[in-house]
Length: 110
Length: 116
Image 1 (cartoon, chains in turn orange, brown):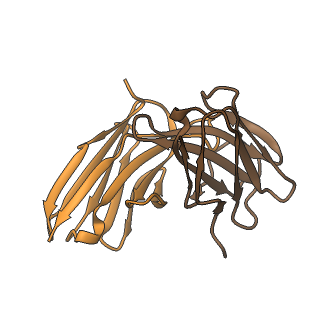
Image 2 (image 1 turned 180 degrees about the horizontal axis):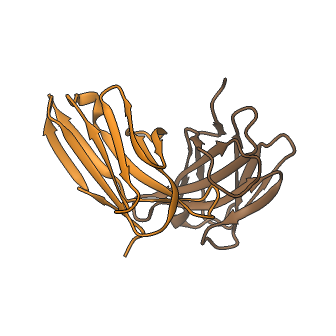
């Protein structure tokens, strides 16, 4: 079993819909990243969380440390949100080593 | 402040050759980590360097090596290339004092390596 599990693997939605992507992990962590990767490669960190909730524009990320679970929400989704979203965790005592989920491919249809 | 830069962006090599990739971290960042991304295995941690020392290592064969210079720039080398080494290689930098604990990483654009 992978240490970091994401769901769903693929998600197609209509423009304007509310999107939720989930990440569960099985190890103790010091931080969790939500990353975005558009076709062509580059990875951008959307959020880094160690507790609670963060919001940036239409994106919201939450984490529940006790339940070892995090969610990424996108409100009023737009075709430009189409990308792969990857959850990555930094394990306790692991310093900068990140362990990644397999990613969620999101497609927003106009 | 300039972001993390990686050179070259694209590279084509043949089996058996070796390759060196370069990563320049954000100014002031002293930790550089390397990751490999393939369609089959996803993103995997290769190694991390801090203050010219390898601090952490992933589960990759000895053909994969790296180093860090005094200006924090880092290189990774893959010797005796195999077809399966075709991947996107990403580096990420972070500011760290060197104490244990995680510091937010910032990713470069990656080097896409194709092995023929």
